[in-house]
Image (tube, rainbow, N blue to C red; front, side):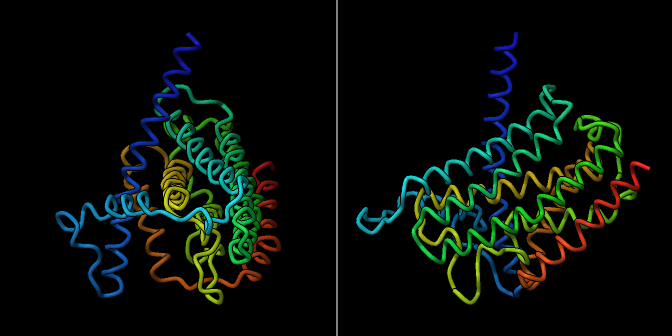
Length: 301
């Protein structure tokens, strides 16, 4: 029976990964379309009907792109870090499918924190293993920004667990709705955190305007670059879904608000300027963490 459950979990996770990747393809197209109209121009509209196959054409271009081995200065450590990021994305899919497969754990929130905590190691390895100072600087900024908010992530998850009474996602999904009205400050800080964790504007510290490079993925092309690019969008979808479940509950409302949070990622990229790195880190460690720790004590009392 246990073997059947594990097989069922593996199959559910694999199907979740495939379906989310298909969603990622159309989400990238939607992002380019929305950004185009926000900037008073047209987005992709040539490949297929209304540009619907643009993402698949870009995927084919990235996969068939070739780089000579003589110039491809990349160590085994960078490849391992890319595969670690793919593994983290697959772990998110496992956590995602458990909510619908009936195999959820009473410590689901804590498993979520474990997976989130692995992201910084992957980013550091990607930057350090590519032998590029621009990539290394971008990875250090991004990984430290991720670590900066992981402490706040932990506090928010602890507060949610104290309010709900357990760390099981099913209770939030089925019985505890609209917690956002009880914890509006936590919701706002959570939105800041998912932007930072997903490396999105205004907290995309992997990139730097002064260096005019792509950031930690500057030395990557074809399949490794595709993995980095796709995993970033997959994590964005998982965080959008988690935000809807954590603060608003399950049912039809969850799917509508998941789309809303995905559009929030696009809106922030189109409108918000990049925040200075030292100001962000100072705010998170001096004020945000203090507010959340005090909130934990208030909930306990």
